[in-house]
Length: 272
Ligand code: HEC
Ligand code: HEC
Image (cartoon, rainbow, N blue to C red; front, side, top):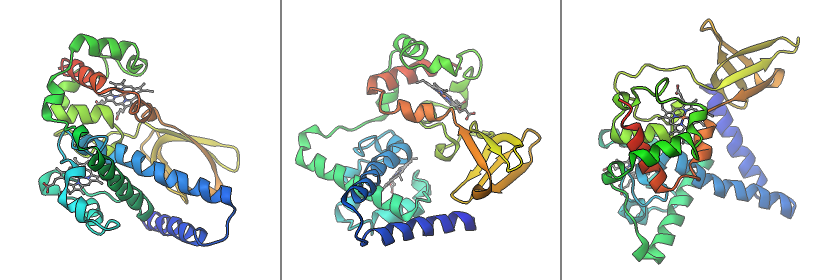
């Protein structure tokens, strides 16, 4: 916990320190661009399911471009507390975003609002009907073909019964964002699973240790080995590689059309 806090403070310090310094044009442009792209990426990954990928409302969260709170927000003074504290009783979980990440997300939400306000005719609401309009056959074709899902999954093995474990919106959310930290609404009675990301740590002696990723920040890398032991090392003293199959899901997000998603959900809903 301390390490995580330190990492956040450290990242903040570097940002502040580097902004006013007379850095070369190229470096400052490079530093500014990812911060902007991040807001959208973070929003897509963490908020998009509920609020819609474009913040115009989703399966279970309101249209943020139409929100009075967002309208009145100045640099995150109102959005920040909602994100950090959540509204658990209303279905919005709290998010432990770092200051720079929060700032980027807030900027993205305002940017979306501005775009939508300029073209009010294009406002599109995503409704619960979205999960009941798909075509099962088309979903199966996408699963086995263009979607590449069958490379890692099988309808008769790991995904058998997935529609009994998660229903409707929860299933759709699980399909879009299956990483443990994004599984904000775990299925009822769901057991904690090992992180599917595998880490291989190479010690200074050349010995390697592998296991499922248990923790990672700037200072610490930790895994749980085959016998369940938690082992951690300072990142500075070892080399490590992470192989995370779930990144395939994040990579898929910008490729899906809404229709693909609806069809896939319709198909997955048959796997009872
Ligand atoms: C699991 C679904 C879910 C996720 C994920 C989620 N939200 Fe929400 N959010 C909600 C719901 C539901 C509400 C409405 C709560 C209420 O009615 O008071 C809400 C409300 C809000 C509001 C207040 C809107 C208003 O007009 O009162 C903001 C701002 C907001 N969310 C931003 C975010 C951001 C930014 C993220 C990502 C970091 C996020 N939310 C992730 C479900 C979610
Ligand atoms: C590179 C491998 C890979 C690909 C390709 C892939 N997934 Fe996954 N998927 C995973 C991993 C890993 C998990 C997480 C499993 C866990 O948490 O135990 C997962 C989880 C899921 C889950 C949740 C399963 C559960 O029981 O919670 C669903 C549903 C799912 N994927 C559907 C899809 C669909 C649909 C596609 C194609 C668009 C797809 N996946 C493509 C690796 C992949």
